[in-house]
Length: 510
Image 1 (spheres, rainbow, N blue to C red):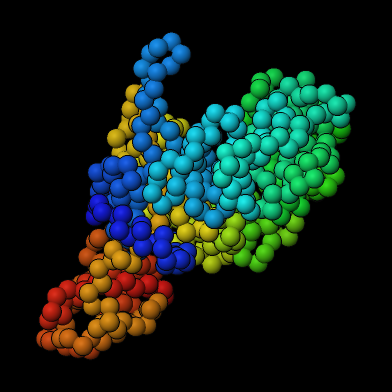
Image 2 (cartoon, rainbow, N blue to C red; image 1 turned 180 degrees about the vertical axis):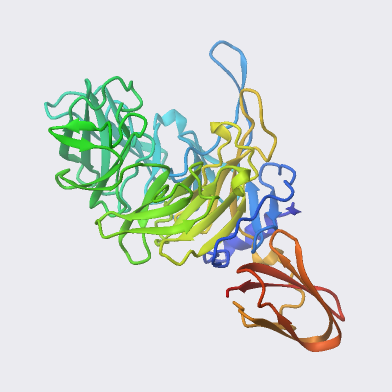
């Protein structure tokens, strides 16, 4: 584990020269990589490197503790962090990020740009297309548009029920909903007595286009959540509305019934008229809406034919695919598909260290291909310390929460937000990359190593650091290593040429 202190010079370079998104290497099959040593908590704006995964991952702290005086004159402590795996942290071009509906920061310098709390924008969501705009969906039904460049806010419209009266509460989600990728449609839920209305709102034309009433659905759920519903959201295309029914209050044996129709699990509706189309699965879990590699829209979630796995369900009803089956993919994790500019991937958090505590991108097909974004190092001892990683629009960065292993804590819990991304090439030491050739890669039966220098020793290690094989030789520039009995996975080759050691990575796939 390395700590990076003076990142300012490289940040200046990155701001001057355009940087293409950089991703960790693709690997298949998935490997469980446990946390080895938890690094020291970096200071605000500083970074550490996770070397335990196949490609080094840079982890940078982006929040600081906030001390303030409450209305009673008492000193208070708050640890501000991002909100949730399905709430976007970055604006559309990734130049800014926001912490909840509180402050906006420069994504390069981590310095505050604007305090948006005074604009009464809670809850606030970045525009998916315009980096200057934040949308706000107020509980009183007001829909607002805030412009960062001018620090001004515009009232777009106010949502009312079919009789023209105000709702008791209006929610986006609640909490887990999103607009479509074009900022065109959004699905809101309104509390109308004991009823729940699903309101389809056209943001471009500032008008409600359809209201679907679910009689008695809000019931005694209070202001925050309908009694029978977990969340409601439009899909990324805006063609579908997906409802995840609350599995604590509904089930196949005990559904919510509306006009003779039983509702439970995860259901898909036509956005135009809220006509019921199909049920994807009988049980909803942590998941998000995205695109598969074939272009079909999908729900990606933990839980399917077995509990320990990641699955995707096509919204058009054309099929269900098991992406990965592994004990690490239990129910205690989160899914983010906020990578709108990189469809075909979902970003996964394994919340518990016992389930490897990793963050990774998973390709949305049946290949099992993953990219490792490092470990979150959080003790995950309470809800606030749950890492809940969310992904940037380009899919090249992850934002997550962590206490860096300091839990359990007293109230308030110590927790910060961090960015994780592939370590910039400027920091990577690969002294012999042009002098050593290793092939084939992926390998099956053997590995051949060719070097401009004599090689004296080759050690092969799995990615947890365990030495699997060692081979000594008498000054050879051409080495053949038998790997027929090796398990599939990622390995490190540590080579000892004449002028100093070198490290190579290889995938073994029998």
